[in-house]
Image (tube, rainbow, N blue to C red; front, side, top):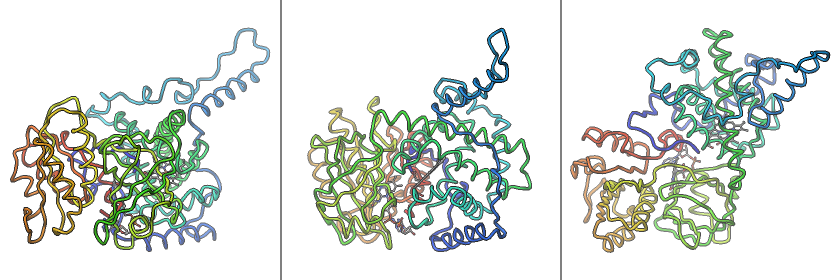
Length: 489
Ligand SMILES: Cc1cc2nc3c(=O)[nH]c(=O)nc-3n(C[C@H](O)[C@H](O)[C@H](O)COP(=O)(O)OP(=O)(O)OC[C@H]3O[C@@H](n4cnc5c(N)ncnc54)[C@H](O)[C@@H]3O)c2cc1C
Ligand code: HEM
C-alpha cells in the first residue's frame, strides 16, 4: 500500500479488521459476482435507489465552488437586504482555507485517553460489521460499480483477494480519526499514490456513498442518524486529506513514470535482478519501495523495494522473486526482457536511515528483503559517517542467498559492516536456525536502530524477539505489515 510504513511492534494484522482469509481469491471473486448479480436482479442485495448519505465533493477546488454556490444562494435569498448579507454558517471543512492537517484534531487529542464521540460511534459500527467483513466488502463494490459503472475500468480486470484493501484502508483510517499524525501521513501517501490509478476528486463521493451504504446495511443493528453523521464527517476528512495530497503532488511529480528495462539478470531459478531507466528523474530514499505495473497485466500494481541507494546514472534496480501463480512477479522474472517498458508509481515507505543520530543499524533481511537492506548500507557509505551496521541475511537454503557475494564484498570494503548469512536448513558456512533466534543471540541491541525486511511472518517474529530483548518498539522500522500480509508474504 502506498501507506504509512514504519510500524510499531504493537501492530498485529491478525487482530486487525478485515484480515483476508488465506488464498481466497476465487471465492472472493465469486462473491463479488454474486453480489453484483443480486444487485442487478434486485435480489437480496438490492441496491437502494437513493444515496444513503449526503457525501459532498471535497477538496479545495470543490470547497471553493461549494462556498461560492452557498454565497450565491444566500444573495438570492436576500436580494433587497440593505446591509451586506451574512451567509449561513458553512461546515468547517468547506470554508476553512487552512490545510486539512491543521483542521483535524491535534496530536495531543490523539494521545488523549478519551476517544472522541465520533470515534466511539465508528468503532461500534466496526465491531458490528467485523464478523461479516467479506459480505460488506462485496456489497461495497456492488454499490460502487452498479451506481458508477464508469469507475470499474479504473480497477484491474480480476478483483482478487487484495480487493478488500480500499474498504480496509477506509475503516483503518476512520478508526484512527482522532490520530492526526497517523492519518495525515497514511492518507497523504495514499492520495499521492492514487494519481496513478486515474482517481479524481469527483470520484470520492461515490466511494463515500458506497461505504456508508454498505455499513448501514451490515451494521443495521447499531446504525442511526448520529452514526451516519459520524461516518460522513470521518469520510469527509479522509477524502479531503487524499485529495489535497494528490493536488499538491501534481505540482511536484508526474502521476507515474515509464521505465525501460535495461538489464535482466536471473540469479536463481525464481529470482531476477531487474534494472530500469525511468523516463524522467525519479527521486527516492534508500529503503523505500515503489509500485510497479507490467505491460502484461494492465492496472495490476505490486510493490517492490529499491535494491540500491539513488545512483548517479538514475537507474533503479529491483530484486524480484517469482511466487507460485503470482501475476506480476512471474512476468518480471520469466517474461520481462531489456527493452520492455513498465510503469512506476511514486516512492513510498519510511524505512529510511536516520542520519541525525550515530546509533548502530541492526538490519535483518529475509529472501528478497535483502534488497532494501543493501540500499540502506549504501546510504550509510555515501553519508561517510562510520556507524556500526550489523546485517543478518536469512534464507531457507544456502543457494537462496542469491546476493551474498555482493554483501560480503561490501563487508570487505567497510570495517564497520558485518554480514552474517543465516539459513534455516543444514548450512555450509552459514549460521543455522530461525533468523529471529540467531539475531537475539547476537544481542543485546539497545544501542541500535532495527530495520526489518522480508516476509510478514519473519518481521513479526523478529519484532517479538527484539522487543522481548528490551528494544523499544519505536526503534524498529519495517514496511507495512498489512501490505505484506495482503501480498501473501
Ligand atoms: C512494501 C513491499 C515491498 C515489497 N518488495 C518486494 C521486493 O523487493 N521483491 C519481491 O520479490 N517482492 C516484494 N514484495 C512483494 C510483491 O509486492 C508482490 O506481492 C509479490 O511479487 C507477488 O506478486 P504477484 O503479482 O506475483 O502475486 P499475486 O498474483 O499477488 O499472488 C498470487 C498468489 O500468491 C500468493 N503470494 C504472494 N506472495 C507470495 C509469497 N511471497 N510467497 C508465497 N505466496 C505468495 C498470494 O497470496 C496469491 O494467492 C513487496 C511487498 C510489499 C508490500
Ligand atoms: C475516490 C475514489 C477511489 C478510486 C477510484 C480508487 C481506486 C483504486 C484503484 C483502481 C486501486 C487499485 C486496484 C487495487 O489494488 O485494488 C486502488 C487501490 C487502493 N485504494 Fe483506492 N480508490 C479510491 C478511493 C480510496 C479511498 C478513499 C481509500 C482509503 C482511504 C482507498 C484505499 C486504497 C488502498 C489501500 C488501495 C490498495 C493499493 C494502494 O495502496 O494503492 N482508495 N484504489
